[in-house]
Amino acid sequence: MKNNSNFGKFMLLWMGELISSIGGGLTSFGLGVYIFRQTGSAASMAVVTLLGFLPTLLLSVPAGVLADRYDRRLLMMIGDGCSALGILYILICMIRAEASLAQICIGVFVSAVFSALLEPSFRATITDLLSQEEYSRASGLVSLAGSARYLFSPVIAGFLLSVSDVRLLLVIDICTFFLTVAAAAIVRKGIGAKSVETKESFGESLKGGFEAVKSRKGVFTLVLISSGRTLFMGMFQILAEPMVLSFADSKTLGIAETVCAGGMLVSGIILGIKGLKSHYVLILSASLFLAGAFMFGFGIDENIIMICAFGFLFFTMLPFANNCLDYLTRTNIPDELQGRAWGLIGFLSQLGYVVAYGISGVAADMLGDITGRGVGRGSAMVIQVAGICQAVIALSILFVRSIKELEKGTI
Image (tube, rainbow, N blue to C red; front, side, top):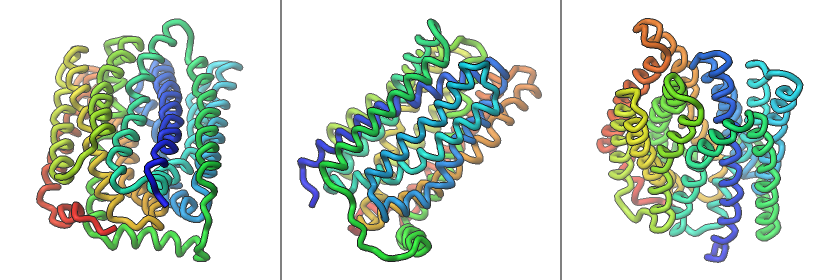
């Protein structure tokens, strides 16, 4: 039975994810700077990001099924705890000598394999704990926790890199895993283990998750649109760092990323306090359109103030878009299918990231060589094209009837 007291348990889990997000952001920032200094290539940075992302994508569907068949909090503990092993491997390689690109790829891949267990279980646990009226507030807070890796981590990492090296960042990240596992363990003890009543096979569970998404045409259409959205967002994510590092140092990059991510803090706090009450489709379309416009502005010039301004506005839009996507999906899928459905949704909607990570770095390096302006301006041009495409997708949402009907909800 869901009740208001469960919001406190959600907040404990949320604090654990906030800490984990900050730690992961330190590692991501530190490794990005480390690799760019070694190779000077956007493509190399993209390869590491791709290998860190692929396990999460490929395992999201089976991880979602596991979240519906086994104790979700236990899966969160295993995923968070064991993902530290990959980071520990990279740290050991760096202590012994300089870590090669291949060694970093291996460590990031191993960490991502275990992290894949976390996302569907965490999202399904939110449904376990909260009432439908609390979903919007929770979504705002979850977006805020996710933004911590962009808001707090870069400026912390930039400062630490000016007095130490990337190994310190990895040590801090490893330490955060203990806190997140403890938070999940406390919540698990408080609400008990999830009892499994179904005797269906693993394949039947997969099929059930697919049917839960496909049966609602609007949800399926929204997922496909989200896949296109992640393609262009992934290009921005990959190329923003090499764009700035081409004319600034790591400390400046850290400050710039923190200022930009401040937009997510502002809108995340607003949504966490009030949430959205209506007009989800309209807000979704408007926020994604403006995000695309701000992406275009982000790549106009090598001016750090202009970059920070457009970056801040871009990140301000993301929690609004994520909140609407989360609500429209969550309220149209039955509770007992949430885990496997979120696993499938995560897989389909994030396919765009795979394409982005595979081509954006190569495209930026190629454009930089062709124009003779270097990888920084090549990255900027790719970001601008991605922004235009994002805006076009955003406008198309307003003309899809099945998506508009999702606001009525079915559960």
